[in-house]
Length: 451
Image (cartoon, rainbow, N blue to C red; front, top):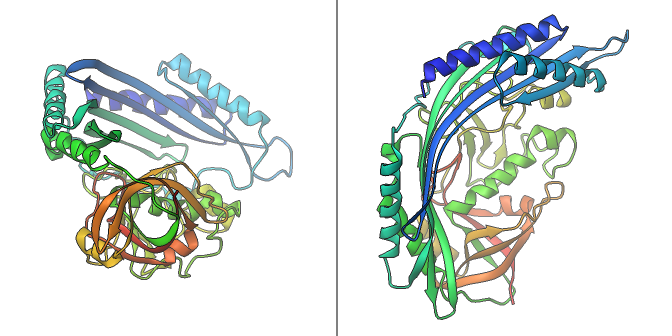
């Protein structure tokens, strides 16, 4: 992809749309355009399953229009999108958005953020690192990953599939305040699934590596071996009796707990009064052993961005400090609904991190003593309104700080408000592969429903 040429085209699309919306009488307008290109290959049991080259375009416009009725406050909103970047298609999308706005109710909180709040300028966050991998090389990488996993142990029955992906993305955003910004980025990954066969049946597990730089990916063979090791460790899973014990969330699933926190303090749930953390700002919501913070401008960060979905400049923020809630997660609209300023989080959080309490994984096991180590979660049994939490889980039974046997078919339950406040420790074993990065989290006690 010629990213400079694509950026020029996207900027032209944004400008054309803004001009057309102004001509048709829109009061305020915001436009986003994007282009993506990528290669994806997958293999299974030494056979090449797919080789896909993709290229896609996206365009979305939101218009705000004053009511034609005198004395009616607020703006009516209309949105439309298309994957066709021709001028005719964009003109149709602009007209469609205005037509939708004609039928929607006025909203006193709708509209762009104030002009003075727009991001002053874009920053180079070092997000663009193309790989240039061709299909033959990608297939070779996938096969070597699968071979390493399959050869790891005689009990590895077969592969559950290996994929190698590389993509480039370009985006541009502009609004009727005169704000324009664009950027480019890359993402690369290797993922592997392996199936182990034991006397009690088969078990599968996966591992993946992801980065903006292909040179930072784990070695393909290591990804395959980790997938195999994880599958082998699940063989011979047992059911346990219902009990109430400490629960240790391994690093790869601990991020889900932080995700539930973010959901509970996000603007939409707050102004709808559909969260158990309503009016919790500047109160204790978690254990003092943990702090949560956002770093949206990290160089090469997986979710880094110089501006949010409303065009506001992103900034570092402390969300929870020693258990105390310091900030909600707000965009312009939700901030207005709550009578508060935006936290530049339109579109979500970016590069969320959590502190640790100094123990490595083995130390956390010893501190837990006897309990359940959770390595896999299933289901969506989380009620943000009440905080009630119930999810299917798999993992390992721990006694005297050591793994005894794999556990399957259990449900772990509690209430997030209590779980957050009874976090005993957070490990140093941070999983660095995603937007939310945290080590293993030890919760003092939870209900474990088994046989």
